[in-house]
Image (cartoon, rainbow, N blue to C red; front, side):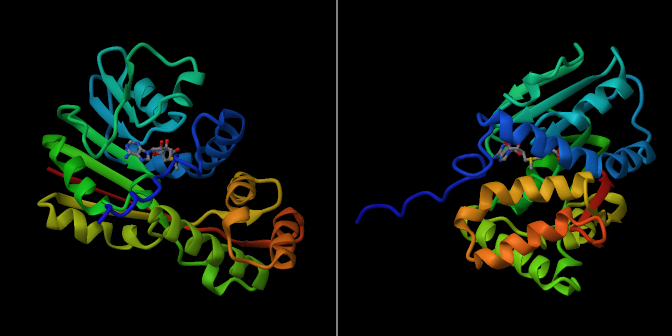
Length: 261
Ligand SMILES: C[S@@+](CC[C@H](N)C(=O)[O-])C[C@H]1O[C@@H](n2cnc3c(N)ncnc32)[C@H](O)[C@@H]1O
């Protein structure tokens, strides 16, 4: 009997990093939507000069560059991704070290701080990967992880938005195993890994025309739509709503949790 075909992974067909013209603006909108909340959480952990940091699934590297500026020349930020092409489109500081590696098999060493955002949710082996991330934190250091949880779109007052987000969740879950609920219990998961001083933050961006959240979802749907099970009329109306300056709604929530080893 021939083995079952391996499941498609993030980046194989969807969100391909070599499609820089599509992925760079999409992930830059993602960063613009979430950076203020991520940076607030990282600031709270006291990241400062000389720290050795690791950013897992760094994408274009917005968080990695912020960490590199905070840690300064005495610190280092290892920016790990299966494909660092998007990261390398930027002029990065010398203390930012790109690392082309699969997080599921990498052995990057140990760090004062290990961070990962909107990455574990897209990797089916996410529970094992979370334990790997914790193993890369030095005693006394911090693990901080953030992912999307969809608390708000189920109850959107705009049915086309409700239906389009639902079709997107189903499609991504079937195609690459994305989980829009895993981060709901990050605090418990970090505690189970033996971390202490657990903290959690939940930030829900607002959907409003011509803002980063709307740009991010429009660009994401551009890629997913051909494989989503959704009537074209509903999809067109959802897009129209995201471009309508009278429409205000809620996006997915970034749940960020941290703990100390
Ligand atoms: C949605 S992007 C998030 C980018 C960035 N962390 C941010 O929040 O702005 C997910 C990133 O994870 C990377 N990725 C996915 N699976 C990976 C794996 N197994 N190992 C390393 N990187 C992976 C992708 O290449 C992509 O750059």
